[in-house]
Length: 236
Image 1 (cartoon, rainbow, N blue to C red):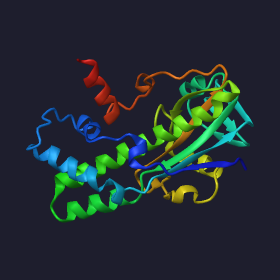
Image 2 (cartoon, rainbow, N blue to C red; image 1 turned 45 degrees about the vertical axis):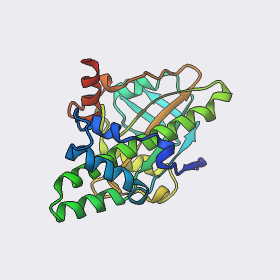
Image 3 (tube, rainbow, N blue to C red; image 1 turned 30 degrees about the vertical axis):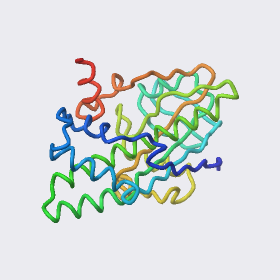
């Protein structure tokens, strides 16, 4: 089995700021007396307590692409990524399989606040969990990029089950390539990750791979909050 590179970035290392969440919430009023701003600030200050960030990746050289079927074989495991993602892996000489979680605390605290009738704070905590998971993976992906650079290698964008027609149940194949209970992330019977605020997927590595500055154009998830933020920014 490939070596797993483990990371546990701090909130500071992820670069997360309150404005990042306000942007995701489409909150234009940034005045300190705005209740949403107050709640976001409060939740942000609690992040060191709520979060338990863990993640990492394993790099595989035994890979084979099948563009006509949209399948990729990694160390004997076949994943059905979709033809679109398979094409985006063109030039990959290696593939990194990654996982990352923001921790169970976001679901616990969100549920607690909702039970107490603090629905706004519950929603903000839940949304913050998604942001922390993605920002943490941004950090880990950046570390991967630094690792392969001395070899003259570049990386692709990261791609995950559930997007671009990649079936969610392929999580089983991905997890089989990683150490058992890596980062304390497990799969439910329906192949959803636990903790919920977790991400997984693949990143291509090679001298001739391409990484775009923004990859939402290739994804068919029209309700994604990150797509909405990008669309809003493009209007200015």
